[in-house]
Image (cartoon, helix red, strand yellow):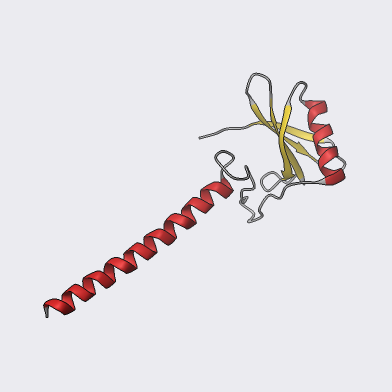
Length: 121
């Protein structure tokens, strides 16, 4: 009887350890992918529409960068990506010299449609 109890206890502990480890890995992965800060690639969160932001490259990235820098004088581009939150196809994340972080929304004609202050929790 005592042996059966011990086997059940060890089995339950192993299941709890595996489930806890899996939850920790999944939670850590979600925080890295959805948060604009921390290690790993910044941004790329999933918007309310279920779409994940994707990094821009090539000519599109260059045009989005140029539009954002023309609008935010003296800013530094941190990243350019698709927009999953506001209905614009593109966004640029810009840091001003005073440390202020901005999100610059850009339309398909590569015109800036809005500049938003980034709010971090």
